[in-house]
Length: 159
Image (cartoon, rainbow, N blue to C red; front, side, top):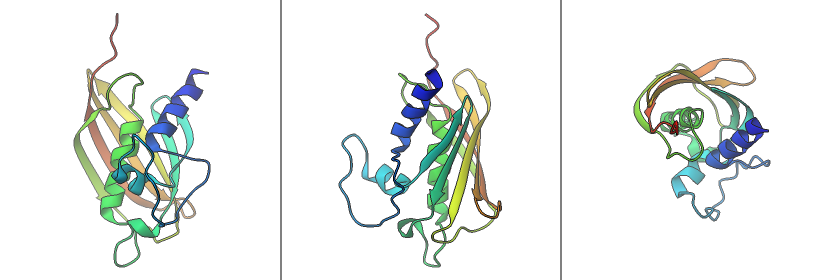
C-alpha cells in the first residue's frame, strides 16, 4: 500500500497522465505547475517504482527536438534532472537541490522514438544523495545518455 502511495506522489511530481500526449498544441498549465515543467515533461509515463528505482517511458516529441530532428541535449539534461530527483523524493520534505550533474551523450534519439528512462540511487550520506539515470532507445536498447546526478536535501526527522 505504501509503495502505491509513493508511486502516486512520483506521478504527481512528474505530472503524468494515463494518456501519452505528444501534441505540441498550446494548452493550459495546471495550477501549481510551471510552464517549464509542463513543456518539458508532458507525455512522460512512470512504468515502475521500487525503493531506490524508477523506470519511465517517453516518446520524443517535436517540441523537444533540435534543428536536425533529434532530442535536444538540453531536454536530455532536464530528464536526467527530473527523474534523478524523483527517485530520492521524500514526501513531506522540500525537493532536493541539484548539486552536480554529469551527462555522457552517447547517441541520438529521433523524433517519435520511444525512450526508456531509468533512475537508481547509487548511495546516500546524510542529506547528500547520488543517482544514476540512463536514457535508452526502448526498441534497440541503445544507450542515448547516461547521467550522474548529485542532490542535497533535508533528512526526515527521527523524532
